[in-house]
Image (cartoon, rainbow, N blue to C red; front, side, top):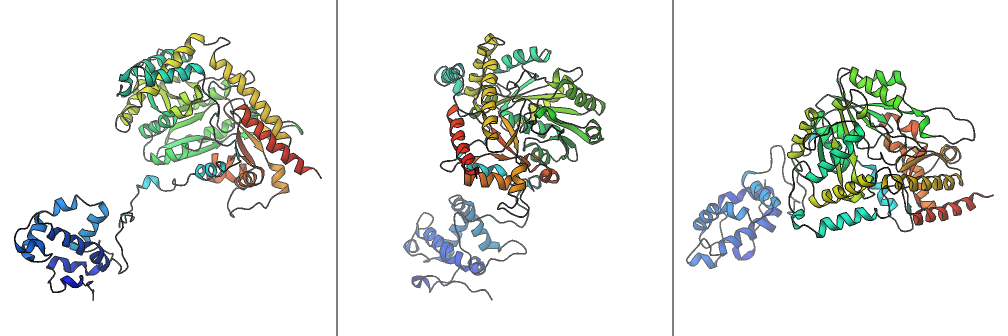
Length: 536
């Protein structure tokens, strides 16, 4: 039998209205919320007149009628938690459930539902390894070589462009065109049209997004349907798989595999190749898209023309869209050439080319990205865009537009940022390679991007039992050990692989070398100390 909590002594002579008897299921809510609420309401005088106004339950019928007539207004004053509590008092808890006698009302109480609260498309993708490693990397005294961002200033012309956007024309504080600030879409169409050998229409073939991440998400949402297959080349940027799953698709993985090298030689990202037969076997009647990343994160591989032609021929043969992530296209080293697959014969018509101002101008916090492609595909991305974020911040787009105009004037010249930046980053890459070798790490020389990976197989043989959970890949345990004991942060390469392949590649870790000279000097100090500890 339900027990109703007694009202305070002053009111014990009152008969509670019949609707309040339902609160027997949740007595503490009655004691802590319902009774004070009813007391407050009946004592306000706002809906009562006469002698009962100054006494809480002086006239039950009038109080109850008044309370009922104004219930909607009362509920509007309270949070969702309070509203749900009142509803339970009237009709009882949801079917199949009962409130316990220990329930309390709290403004921070979690919402519980008989139905699954989150959308099914979120199942299995809630864990993000970056959260843990970013937290570890932010501890005092740690040299963060894990996250992919420059810790030096963007070029002067880009900073001046941003300052101009913020302090100049006040209308840049307002909305711009939904699919891109017109001066930016025009310069992107002009600049990349020449590189791709296409007449790019700024209104039909260009979409400005919230970073390249936004471009990727919009592309997956626009094109991938339930049951569609998406081929992902591993190692791959870790958002491709969850974005495929969120759209209802099924990721299909194919791995780049390293070729054998001579003893004593350093490996190179150019030695990591696709098996043509294996790649061809991944295509099926359900294949909707292939995601290509060149230069590749985390490996730094720049796909050759021959490799791109293989991918292109299979996409055309199987009528598949190619989504190509080319955010590192200006960061190519040792004379290697970046080739956009959209520039190959027959590929513009089935390719979405994604770029990033953050990577282009060393300003990752600006979060301005874009996607280029044929109108018959782009129109579907515009549909997603206009029904989600609608448009991107105007000032950042204006700054990127002016930065591209500066670069367009200097493009190909020695003072071009697209010439100066890769030259400077190649020197820093070489610096890091030499330093990492000093403690027995074996870097894989990247052809491009912000990153290099290094082989830790020797450490895995010598230190096989590092702390960690039973199913935790070795590289993850090694990175945590290195952060704690050596003060250097990196990222385990296994997070860039699908679950079945992680243990096959758990003897590599990733470093970011696009860092300030002072950061690399701090790295050297940590490595010199590590080297001294290795001496017998």
